[in-house]
Length: 485
Length: 96
Image (cartoon, helix red, strand yellow):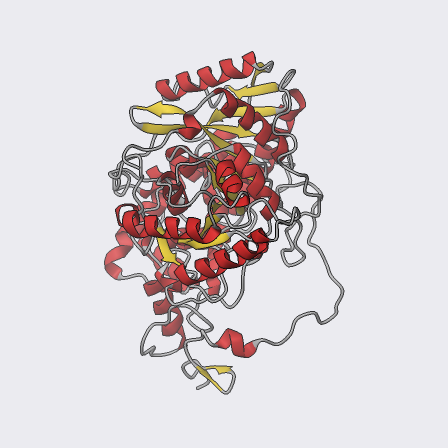
């Protein structure tokens, strides 16, 4: 059942071949049986899932054409989204005791569409990481090779999908945290335009970069899911008020005349040879479909990492100042005074990577350093964005690798945290510019998946999904399942 | 620009973060490694470039009418508080 396509599951539910309760129990049993190997879930919400499934079955029995296509379909929420009455930890000891009193808008929308939440997935602590090794709840293992990381920070969602423990999952992406784990786990993952999806109830890491997004097996599935979660939200002051199209409508559009840009900086000598070859194979398929390929340049792309690792920690140091042990979350025992309460609650509640980033952020924002670091980074951010705008005058979409390599072994980058930061080399510029980007499975290197990244102009998610879908009609990388699943 | 143990100590105080003495050398090393990466930024001329905090041009903070739209939900929100008495969050004495 779990190896069926989403469209088949939807059809089975509609034709009553299976009920949502049966489908939900099937997945809950799989999680129970298999997840010890992957550690992809932090919380499994058995009771709530069965209640939702029962509600969904009632709706489906009405045979009402208006019922959302995803009614009754099980899914998982990254544990960064507040879920009312259910633990929301953000992968951190700081929130180990946090039962959210409200639902994030993303969660509300999924519930309103009748989707069935199986549980909350594991993640790098406070979304800071590229390997899902910083979680308070232990590292997540990649179902393609359990000695390897699944990528991060949405590693739990990625691993759960790859292991077929759920057919759809949410992720969030600040520097690559949807696209990179999607690439490392053979999945399709989309980071939409900044402001496309509400951040209300999505625990903040870097407010000008964070964006929620759908993760699944194909562009087709993501289009259905994006229809549910996209949209303006009054409660998010950075939400952009622009209409939500039907993302499934343009999936099959012809690619004749599509101009694809290849940044020469992404295809430099340093690109892994096999990744380069797989990307060239993908380019040939696009040329067969009628697209033309053009070399472009993103001259400031080499500065994306320095800019990102100045801006993101700065914003994180501000956002994480709310964790003070007063209103919620971890509180140190027997505080000597208020200062001790703050310092020890935060010292005990946060892990090492989070502390590193708070310290970095506080440092670059502090007097004497603000201009040289933070303000400088914001100016270069402008240049990086302008590079993309210039490129989009020449081409419709930009193509390149998602990550510099395949999933690496657990612990491989523990000795030097900064080496982990380089995992974001192809993804973080897209967050800085606020553009939409999708990662699509494009092959395997040895037994590990590789992803291709497509970057679009603002609010061109429908076009990105179309371009990805047409590729997926010609290839089957996105249908590959890890051995033993 | 090189970061020292005193810098980490001062920064940790600003961030209200308790760092064990034994951990400070590792934080010094890591922050210095990061700053080496970040120092590349100084190579670029950014005179006459405006800083950008929102990715899209022309976006400003949205305002709303100054009308009450939310209800007081103190009881619900305080269920999860570490220490509450009569609707007040309790902390160690601050006033001497």
